[in-house]
Length: 304
Figure 1 (tube, rainbow, N blue to C red):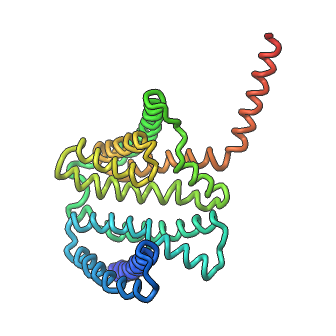
Figure 2 (figure 1 turned 90 degrees about the vertical axis):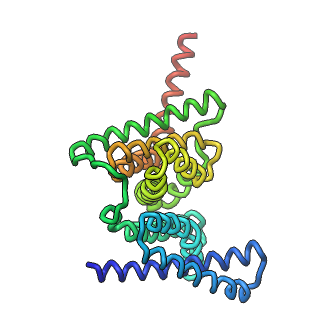
Figure 3 (figure 1 turned 90 degrees about the horizontal axis):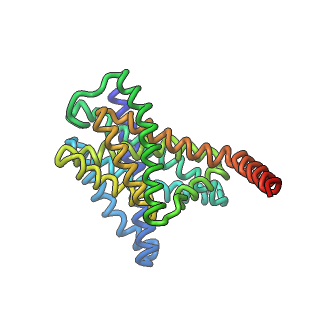
């Protein structure tokens, strides 16, 4: 088992470093307008340096190093891996449809990212990781998983109402709308939105970032910082209150149960509901709304 673990670890470490190198080349060419040769020349030593630092982090294998690697893997997944995947799909397989390109590259990059993060956290709790304290038993965990689903739905509704009533901000999210638009054209992308994405986000923002901060500060400070990062990373600053509130709700579930699976289940349930309603049943909902509008219009005409 250890041989398989280390083999996969080396494989994904190499993939990550290729993604880092590719990202650096793109940055040098796009931001600093360097030619290909110079970009590669500068990217090579930087990639080697990053590989050396990350390998040292793996060897030390402390809680801080492990969680730092998780965050680094997430950043590389969102940037380098996505760029590599989309470039390969466009150049080798001649994928030109934008939704298909984003969907396929996201599935590839998120899957690799999830495997890497799971490999990093494979023995986390045996190596003094996770939250300190007694974990909930299986029955209580199941109960709180169900409670957590209602909690996060309620939190989103309340935060949305506050945002709308006090600040006059519409509850519709541009970030969500963009993701739904891609999923409508490429249905397999739903897996990223509803399952893989929530798992990765909880491992990164709750287990790694919040967990590390919580052991050194308190719930409010750790929750505030991790929730703000969670909100900012979605690039939807208009709805930062909703994302921040959701971050606190997920953090509460993690602290209450000491099991990361609970906020993962709640997060998956929330995203799945949104994507299923907006992607798979949007036509039926629109038909229902049109019918309801027609009926109420006719009733109004009769009453008049």
